[in-house]
Length: 80
Image 1 (cartoon, rainbow, N blue to C red):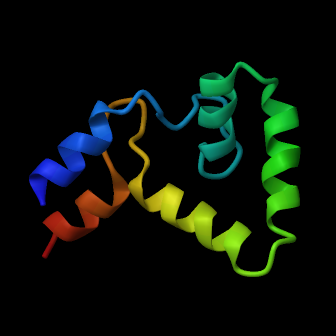
Image 2: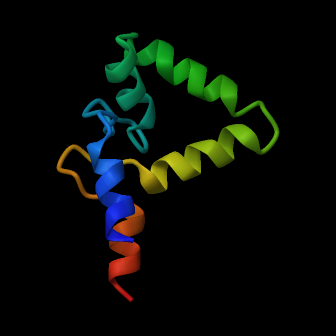
């Protein structure tokens, strides 16, 4: 399982420092170069898709590293 999380840390995508909730839109904005408010609007529009928008956001939230490299799902699994 450690190699899985190490692979996730190897990707360039991180949660953005400009965050309102989970930082996913901020990270996507940083990665794509779009304005953070445009990306937030696109993420909110994706929530209109049945299950896919919210489900994808929750998966991204659980697996996306913070700026310091910590991953929420990894921290939850390490507590057991």
